[in-house]
Image (cartoon, rainbow, N blue to C red):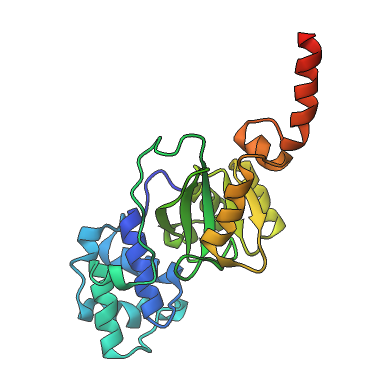
Length: 243
């Protein structure tokens, strides 16, 4: 992504939720329309100054032909403005984030989950609304962040921007991902794992958690520890060397 973000992380979350409230408005032109009105970077303070009339003009203006339209009820406009202000976020389908400080879970992995609704693994890498960010350790699974893809989708190379968005993670769970996108994810140092059936994010992560004590080769490489399949062999070598 660009060195100068077009939106703060909190602003991006608000925009993504408001777009969904506006009949699933296409986020990219919506972001463009907001920048035209408020100038980049989009911040919580700037969004907090928008009025219903402002939003109505934005949706009916020059960006209408790009996907922004006024085909929404007045109450939807009011609800969308409240969401842009940050009101009602607690009642949105963005799950609550758990308390976490760096180092709380020694030996844990940071895992992204492609999501559209709630705390579910239900997204394609290139089109999901958000990434849920978890810290997965042997003793706990904590949701430490929710990252909207709104800013990434406004970038020239959307898949590269999405990869950068989760670049601090070691693994990303998705329902599906195309080959070119997967290459960019791997280049960013993130290991993609496909779960076509999807489901609850924590169920998939619980399966991962169970494998941390005795990891298969692919997971051992990520963790930087010997694979479970090699453990017995290495133990035998140590015994021979000690003899």
